[in-house]
Image (cartoon, helix red, strand yellow):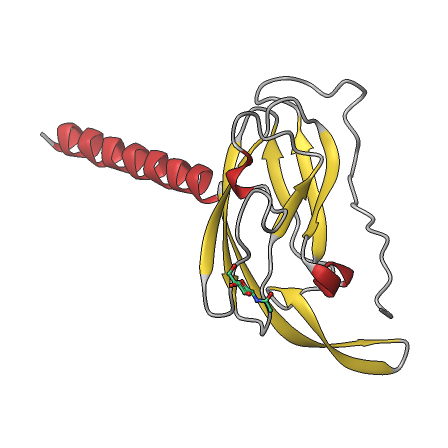
Length: 171
Ligand SMILES: *[C@@H]1O[C@H](CO)[C@@H](O)[C@H](O)[C@H]1NC(C)=O
């Protein structure tokens, strides 16, 4: 009786761990990008710049080759914006690829748009950036596409990886 209880308790424990694991897996495929102005200081100069989530450079997207991820873009800025996933082929799905008035309408201030990103053949580090007017000057970040789940790196697995993004914050 006692061991039966203990068994069901551990089964419940395993189930909750599994649910937690599934939840973490799923949440890593949904990102929220809040486009907003933020105060930014570099080299003793402070200014308001347009950012994603108040970060400059913006957040790093991480996926595995073969993954599909979703980015919910909320435009809390004052201007229309689109976000482009640079170097991602988006096979048969250009509808959330970014170029304004070509594959999608811009996201207007106060509106949001869920963008689907399909990683088919890409592997390595690429980037995302705003695809509307001057907003691309500060709205960008890295996309890291790891090898397919279960596959190994095409080179010895690095000890550590640090994305380096070159940009010009003075514009
Ligand atoms: C913003 O986007 C909307 C919808 O596409 C468009 O009607 C409007 O002209 C755009 N505004 C500017 C300033 O480009």
